[in-house]
Length: 112
Length: 115
Image (tube, rainbow over all chains, first blue to last red; front, side, top):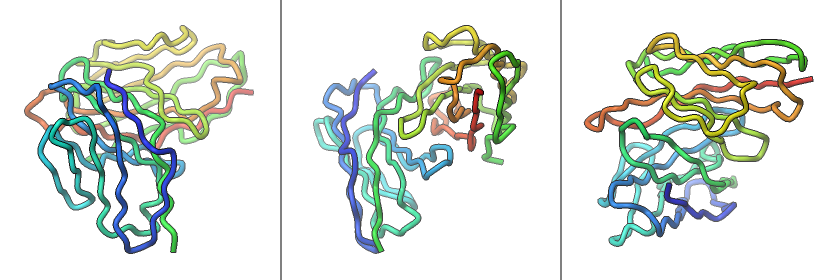
């Protein structure tokens, strides 16, 4: 399984964009980049995923570099409710070996 | 219905007790997972079921015994646990077919305390 590296913590001012980086230099061609977050004492929540193109949904945008060795999750207007641990995970899509292996994640603290 | 429901939410058990954790989903997902999460650590994968068959066991001690009686239910049977097994136990489910969106849905977890 490919490994990911994330900064342990980041701060962001409320209303500003939060940019969370992730390195995944050993990613394989069939592996997707997934982002999940875990708000304190809750189960992880899916945010977004992508293969090589940039992706956007109602929660966030995902920017993947051309060589696919790193990515950035962007929360365009962070709110206090976005304070959580954000996990970047690389995994094949579907199949019997589909499993999510969590790294240490980034604790994002949104400040008022 | 996009929920994964776990019961109970909290469980306190003695080291000689036998208890079970339950997980249920009605999204038609054919992959189900058990994770263990200690405080301030990321979730650790324990077991994966694919089409109701155990496909991955991440070298979990035998005092944890998973069971998938049908495509909607996943159980984790606990026996002779140790205090260090106290943790948040998370269940998740996801589709298996590549053409479907493969995001995983997680339950809110069972907070287990072994005394």
